[in-house]
Image (tube, rainbow, N blue to C red; front, side, top):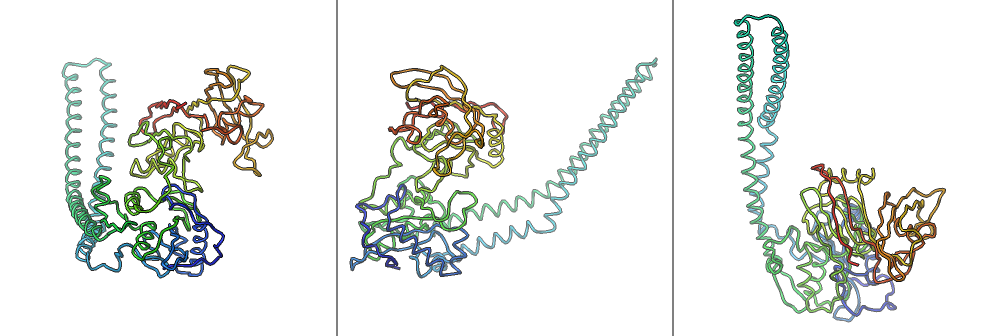
Length: 534
């Protein structure tokens, strides 16, 4: 499992500290190891086909007992249906190889799955569903027709009442109306009884299915507990701890599914148990981007916090580890508002809105962990811009909100501090922007090919050498506010800390302080506010 590098690494200096797995710049040796792993995959067709579907790999630079520098490689989960392949370190515990320990529980769960499938695919169950649907449809059609007939009859009675009628004639019309109403209720009750009878039959099937699912859940929890008890981890101090004990320290009674099966814990475990000295580590994505996440082929990524943070916090004990820059107070998100459809957070300056090419963790990933479920992006803020960032919790909500942004139905307000003093107290800037192809990510003003932009502004406060301004963008182009502030045909006053269009500072002094949108479920106009930290 110990691999020497295919290229000459003698000129590459070793790091002073071990990699912080949650925020790092890949060490050059890790990049070299990644290339060797990719070369190996390219030479093994079966593994390559599996990897191209999308897989996280990891490399750990180590020193062996002979003082040689090499690397270990691992993949997360399974590759080509197996937990173990000869080039890669083995799993901490191989479920597929040691299947006997849970075979009875696994068979019980499989048996329940077969019973559920048998019920759901049975002719009787499908007929029960069909009968409920048809009886409801028949009820609606019959009652609708009766209402139409009653409406016509009422109009006819109203016409008769306009002419001379005897008392007996009037009473007859009343009796006719009462009879029709009573007949409607009788038919409605009869139809309800038919629907209820059909629903009762269907409910029997569904209750049976739910009962089986409940039992399956109980058995799955029991099996999971038995499985996790087999995961015993080590650290550099040669201490050992079970998966349950590790997560208990994090006040999590049950580890999440798949905990301990990622590449990073596998690499460290193998190093500790085989007397290799860990030097540096990195994880990278290979193949297609997953459907529910944003990952690019060949890019390095931090270790997952949900599954790996508790494990790695224990396993790294005894190593001299780099500081986690993302643990600083100004690099944490806070929740402004949350319900079943949307999540609104305050993104700090210096944090990506969504995952990018670097290993730095994004606001999307932090928010997803806080929410403990899938999130969908709606809009973005520049990495250096702080403030209100909105996420959807469902694809329907995402589609609704994205249309609002696209149709300019949202209202956004930013606060900024700019260098100097604008000539006017307020106004509108309309400079067309286009990316500078030769110098990305810069944007340039181009009246021929640029896209339309519009920004309203008003001065809030003037101080010596600087001005506090409120920006109200009517369009949402990349770097729109930054260019509109800095360009001579705009304000001619770059935002403080703008290292692209102005001068660097401790941060970019631009903050999204207000967002107004229509709630995607309730239709209510929602206004979110977040005071600037400057």
